[in-house]
Every structure is written in C-alpha cells, then in structure tokens.
Image (cartoon, rainbow, N blue to C red; front, side, top):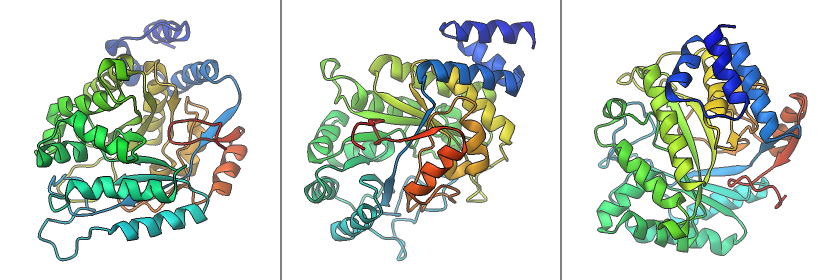
Length: 359
C-alpha cells in the first residue's frame, strides 16, 4: 500500500474526516482491496451487528409526459404525445392495492414534469393513498418535480412542501441529482434544476423545524458513467456531505450507474471494480450518512453480494414495478431475505426512513 493511501485510510479509521483532495486521491490511486477493507471496518463500527437491511415498496410513475427533456431518458413522452399517460387517482389506488397484496406497504410516487397536471392532483393522490392505507409510507416527488410545482403555482418551495406533507407525503427522494455540477447538468438537460436549486429544495425539506425546514427524511444518490470527471464525482459527494452536516436527515446514499437509453447521451461502461471503489469511498468519505445502499436494481446480485463486504449495509430491494430502468433486482420479500442470508448476514426489514421497529 502506498504511504499516502495508508495515511488517509488510517485517518478515516480513527474517525477523522477526510478532505475532498484526499477522497480524490483514494478514488484515483487506492487499491480496491484496501478501500474495501477500510470501508467495511467503518461500516462494522457504525453497525456492529451482522445485519443488512432491505425494504419493500411500489414505484408508481403517475405520468410519463415530461418537458424537462433529459438527454439520457427514454421513458419520457412529449407534452403533445398521444401515447403519453396520466394515471387517475383510482388507477393509482389499484396499483397500491396490488402492492399491499404482495406485502409492500410503501409507495414511491414519481413522474415526469407535466404542466397539464394541477397541484390539486398531487395533494389529492396523497390524501387518497393515506385515506386507504393510513399506516403506509409515501416517498414522493423529486426536487425537479417540486420546483415545477412551485413555478407553476406561484408558491414558494416551503409552501409546496408543506402542503404536500400535510396531504400525506412522508419523505423525499434526492432523485434528479445525477451529477451535481453545473457542467454536467447542462449535458443532462438545460431545463433541469440547477445544483443550487436541487440543494435548496432538499435543504428545505430535510432541515429541522427550528431551522425553517419541514423535518422530513430523505435519500440521496449519485448516477455516473458518462462524461463526468473524477473531480466532479468528489464535488457531488461533497454536496451530499454538506447537506447532511446542515440537516441531519439524510438517511442513506446509493451509487447508481447510467444505463444506455438514448443515442444523444454518452454512456460508458462502469466496471465492477470502479463501482465497488466508489461505493467503498462513499462509506469512507460520507462519515455522517449512516446507511450506504448497493443498487441491486442496476448492478445485479453478484456485485450486490460483494458490495455488502465493501461498506454497504442495505440492498434497497425488493422494488415492485420499475418502468424507467432495466431492473436486475429482487422481486419478493422472500428473495431479499434469502439473498442477505446467502451473503452471510442477518436480514432486517426497514421502512424508507430506515426505521426497523415497524416489522
């Protein structure tokens, strides 16, 4: 092991925060085995028992009509498309009924940015879901969707989030982040919310009440495997760490990789080694984020098993009905528990806020 690598990893193992430049050095120069060993040691200190968590939820994409026009997305339909859809509240409830029958009592509500939809639709679907399933957990609406609601209805971000929360929204996904640098966001879509806007929306949702926020909990991620630089990857991680420093309500972080969906967005193949390096680095660098998830949905079971020994403590599965990505994930609660046991750990079911006491 190089001396510089050793000094940085020893620093992290002592519980000291590593800098952005040190994180970049590790990403570019550290051996995967050394990174993984350090990451797993930190994971075991934070979560001493040999437990790995999983969760079960239904994704409900309420519309595929979207005006943001992300260059990497093949799910979207233009506003004037005769093939696009908007689910009725009754259709959404039918999907929720199906999820409940399969043992999934949580709903992830997300869709395109569709100007045809009035704000009352969003509050109405939340109220309807909570009325039918009052004990369910609803994670809903990315910062991109929230920003559109704010602009379309002449309301502040806080007002929008407050009304959604009152209607039944329990937590917020950090979706729509991909890579949080302005250069990459212009490549993703000129119409997508800026890094600053994404941060401010998440900050408002997650901040405690006494700091002017809604005290929600939320998840964060990175999506890479395009033309981003290593420096931009670390800049993205730095933004997540700052968000958690300032709010304390980031439950988890998950590394994702881009899938090739269109010809207009450059996608490179992220090797298993690179994926595991960034996952391990996430555990080391994000010293204030308690849970690191491995994306079985995108990376599959083989990498998933290895990742649980490289700093991850959660598999974020099973997911019912994934329409945007090609899914390699688990399809049932029994599959999730068997996968964790076969990987050498004890399965623990949790909700989307990483609360275990409900199950």
